[in-house]
Length: 524
Ligand code: AMP
Image (cartoon, rainbow, N blue to C red; front, side, top):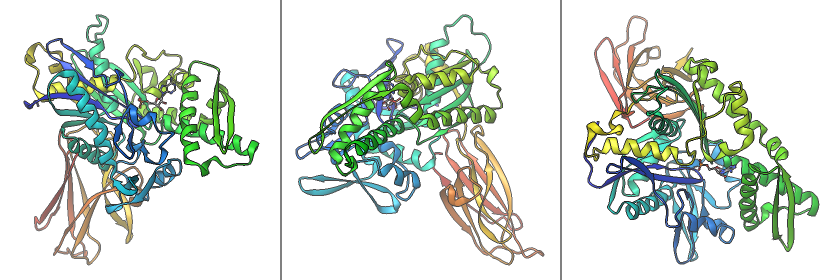
């Protein structure tokens, strides 16, 4: 499994709002979180352009109010998506920066540099954040960093994963593996508890990961010997702290309109300042019952000042919080485990500091206390660092290393299938590999060509809808010169094979002649 790499290998949690990197020190036999230039363990996933320089991280975030249209954030919400995706269109309305449709329907971010427009693909911007983390890691470790394990939301689709990998490559990193965020948190949890004398049997662990932009839930079986078996994953790649900030911003915009009959949305600078103030108020509401949102001269000389109550914040976001619980329920159903059989609920991600979120999780699990002794901001990077060390083969003493004990068994987050026609009508999805199937796996489906058609187009999709237009097209290929049977149709066997690295190979064979075609679709 391991490959010897040139330099150091690190783990990176590339978050929507904050990112974190960590490294396993073989000598010290422990993982250390890598601080940034300011000494902080997490770095804002922000990139900003001003006339003289490129800013990444804290420097970029700090100047957002002065430079809102050239300060880019939430890029993880764009990565691997298409410009016309409804979610992209919705998110765009709340961002002060400009997005246009780029090549291959890619959303492309436009900034102005010295009076000239410059365009960036989301993966290029994520690469800038990754490069920053790489540089901080090199300063901390004292040698070159060449390799990384990067974490992604378990619910990321193939395109989002591919684009994240591309960002790693653009940052000059060899991406050893992309690993699901909750699985990385589970590795950290497993390591943390291996010394626990009371732990004898396998544990069912539910990881509830609510970050800045995404919500992930994973159900895993962890053995004391280090085997981590993912039973089911679920989530929403557009649900997180950014949404809670947005509801608060919208509330403030409406209050301002009621009071002053002015629309703050007309002024990007005012919106930028309001966003910063609302995120702060949201954080304050995790420890206080009331929080002020106060900004001097917010709009045309008018000051803004209101007091938001925790109850109001919870009311504004109630539907998001409920959605998280519904997704937990679905994940348990998919994993065929009753909630009473969950031994431990581990919460990670900055947004799980919101008291209402914790309370809802605890209530759902009939009063079970959630596991808080892991650092929710760092656990994901921590787990990724352990895996990076294992995969890089850089640990000097494999036998004596806790890292070498980890055995991962992951699942496919979304169903995979082909487009079929029913009663001559195209556009239907036939699932070949259902979501939450353990990988590696190989599954087959038998299909017929359309009547009197001598060629067949095999289109491969990912997603849960029975209509392919609501799913993601991964690739397509054709089989020509089919031999028609007595019923006027040809019989095709379609085989989906996913290897341990998540590489999907789809092949189709005309069973009567043995004519065969295949395509390889990268990591899913
Ligand atoms: P992560 O992606 O895990 O780094 O989480 C970042 C998100 O957590 C951002 O939306 C933050 O605003 C949010 N966050 C951090 N601390 C708190 C807090 N004390 N209360 C509420 N949200 C928080």
